[in-house]
Length: 129
Image (cartoon, rainbow, N blue to C red; front, side, top):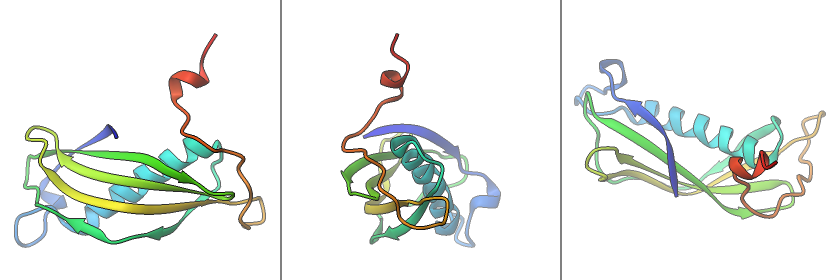
């Protein structure tokens, strides 16, 4: 799993307990996963269909640096399924895992549309000479 996006936990991201608010983290994850799906499917018309069980393993505190890792695990005819892990950048301790996030490719009418992808594509492969 590649960890590309990093976030700095700031005071506005905290819950009353002084730890990272789950809603803030889920917003970051959904945005990062959508961007990943857009790149994988080569389409900006993707929507979140499903997010499976979210397993909060540990917490993050103010000033922690966290990183989000996302990878494709399955390609459907109109969808892509992703896995996600969030960890502390310094300690590498896992903060959260999500085994299944499904994004669906849509046509111009907002209906599910085939995307034709069957495997992970890497940015470096898109710019070969």
